[in-house]
Amino acid sequence: MKLQDVSIEILSQLAQMTQQFSQEEYTRPLDLLSNNSVGRHLRHILEFYDLAARAATSGKLNYDKRERNLALENSPREAVSKMKELIALIRITKDDMVLKLEASYSSDERNDVKITTTFYRELLYNVEHAVHHMAIIAIAVKVDFKHIRLSENFGIAYSTVKHQQTA
Image (cartoon, rainbow, N blue to C red; front, side, top):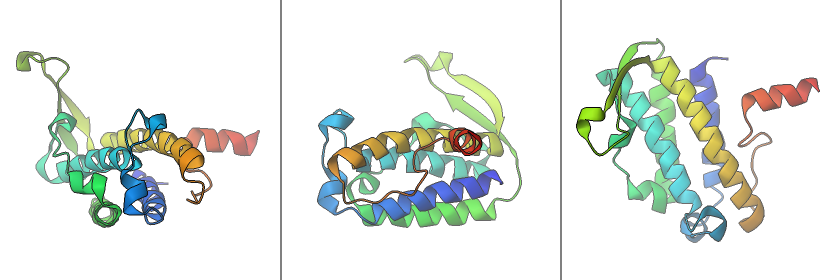
């Protein structure tokens, strides 16, 4: 399975889940999530994917310089719309390409990290990043939103699913 397909599957699972939330549920701060909401976790996932997808055009990527679009955090409808947009962007990006990645690990810009990466490597990172946050979201859903139905392997690493199938 191609990384684009995995990313589309993840975004589709997230859209299916998000459509089940009321706006109040989606934005509710939860003790279990250190007073964060499901919407905040979802916004974080979507912004990372958005930066990676757009880097395919610009050739540059910096996850630290994301917009932090609060509409994605506060509106399930906006989040689902963004997921559809990302799916379309990922579908049309067929080839791997070299990207320049920048990251900050201190307040001094002179210490910024600048490395070469690829679009596929960043899609892989986004898959792992999304699954990590989906696992956290899944816990919150099971505790606070029992009426929300998640897909069978929501928030479970693909390697774990594969291992469970062979065990």
